[in-house]
Image (cartoon, rainbow, N blue to C red):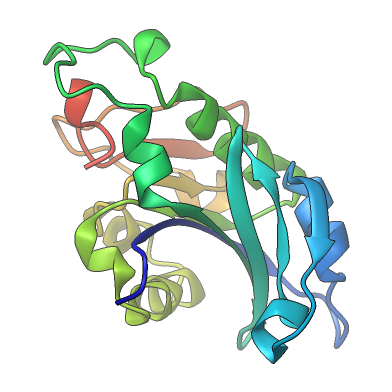
Amino acid sequence: MSERTISAAFFMARDGEAGDALEAMAARAGVTGARRGEGSAYERAHLRGRWAGLGAVVGATRLAAHDCLQIELREADFLAQRPLELPPELALAADPSLALAEAFRDACLALPAEAGAVLSLPQHNDPRAIAELYRDVLGANPDALVRAAVGLLYLDERLGRGTVVPPGRDTLPVPRGLAVFAGHGRSRWY
C-alpha cells in the first residue's frame, strides 16, 4: 500500500513548445535542496527537496496547454503539524499549517500559475483528481474550481475576477488573484 500524500498542483500556461526545466520551476516555487533522484525512471524524473519546512517530491507534467508542477508531501508530516485539539474558530494567523499556505501562495505568484490547488482531502489521493481540476482550468471555469473544495485553491487575477467565495470558507490574503480554503477555522484545509 502506498503512503498517502498531500499534493500541491500548479497550472502554468505554456508559451510555445518548450516549458521550463523541472529544476527551474521547483526553484521558483520555493523548493530548497532539490536533487534529482537516481535509479528508477521515476526517481530520475523527480526531485527530492524541502518545501514549507517539509520533505517534498517534485515532478512536472506537460498538459494540453499548461505545465503542471506537482509538489507532494507526506500526509503524516502535514497532520503532525496539526494537534487534534485545535479551537473550532482557529484564526488563520494561529493555523499550524500557515507556513504551507504561505509557501503555496508565494509559489503561485512566482511561477506564475493561472491556478493552483493543495489537494488535502482523502479523495485527492486518486490520480484522476488533478485531471479533473485541469478540465476546469482549461475551460476557465472558476466557479467549478471553487466548488471542487480543494484544501486551498488559488486563481490568478483573470480567473479570480468576480468569483464568489462560498459562505463558510476562509481566504488567504494574496496581492493578486484569489486564494480560498475548503472550510473555516480548524477545518479550513478540509
